[in-house]
Amino acid sequence: MAGRSALVTGAGSGIGRAVAVKLAAEGYAVTVNDLSAARAEAVADEIRAAGGTAAAVAGDVSAEADAAAIHAAAVGAHGTVSLLVNNAGIAHQAPFENLEVADFDRMFAVHVRGTFLMTRAVLPAMLAEGAGVVINIASQLGQIGGVELVHYSGAKAAIIGMTKALAREVSARGVRVNAVAPGPINTPLVMELSEDWRAAKRAGLPLGRFGEPEEVAETVAFLASPAASLFVGQTLGPNSGDVML
Ligand code: NAP
Image (cartoon, rainbow, N blue to C red; front, side, top):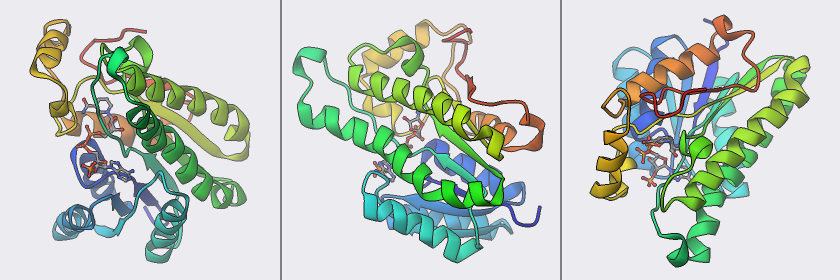
């Protein structure tokens, strides 16, 4: 377990929190990032209370200086980042005719620019080491689209494309890059979508229920592990059957 250090963005809540807790339980020293310092600290405290190793750092993954500072804080706390989980995300629902430019831009900034900036921050050391894992949290809506979610679906599709492209570029140099595309998961983010939206989605799920953050964390932990050594540029779907590939 020695030398394994994970940086999880947007880990003060929901899926990111569950991923941070799971990775810590598996022996990773975890850096918990969130926009909110208080939420990041709370999750780091939770991990430490359970006997794990954790540091907290506030910062906006879509801001270039913050991304560098988040990475520097992780290296300062744990010496290295051997696993990056690009999880930070936001939800916003709007019919396409009413979709404001600012909301479109923010969606792409947090998800696409944030994934780019954080990956760019960690990658040089991983390549120098000849080892590392990057896991990007996409969404099943990046695969099939979501009604009134053109900006969200587009940003998540971009993340899937970035995952594949980077995997082609760096895999032979020891860095494995994959994505996880969850279906609807019970977190504060999904509650930002309308009740009608959630009811229609739930009715169409083969499993008949939304997932829990801990069920997504299992997929992330698998992709991070040596058991996933042949998984390169893949998008795994813990999605209640919403997408079947
Ligand atoms: P969540 O509970 O709202 O957690 C997301 C966390 O990311 C929040 O604490 C949020 O802070 C933080 N965050 C937002 N923008 C950030 C930024 N620029 N820099 C750093 N942190 C930021 O949502 P979740 O459902 O766990 O979502 C986690 C990821 O899973 C997202 O990428 C989401 O798109 C994806 N996903 C979720 C679902 C689902 O149904 N829940 C399905 C598929 C994919 P604030 O609360 O202050 O914004």
